[in-house]
Length: 45
Image 1 (cartoon, rainbow, N blue to C red):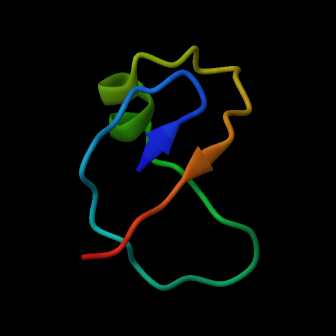
Image 2 (cartoon, rainbow, N blue to C red; image 1 turned 120 degrees about the vertical axis):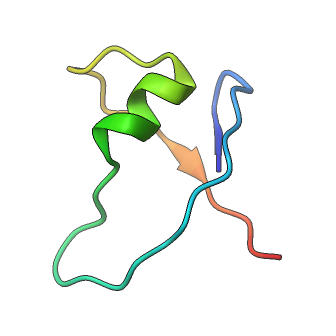
């Protein structure tokens, strides 16, 4: 996963219902403000 600012982190994607969710740990790893609504790009291996 990569943010618009170029920060990147490897994550496990889990199936869910409704909208996409980003975990608190992912926000911290990416250095994002907890009130931010980041745009991210997800890549698969």
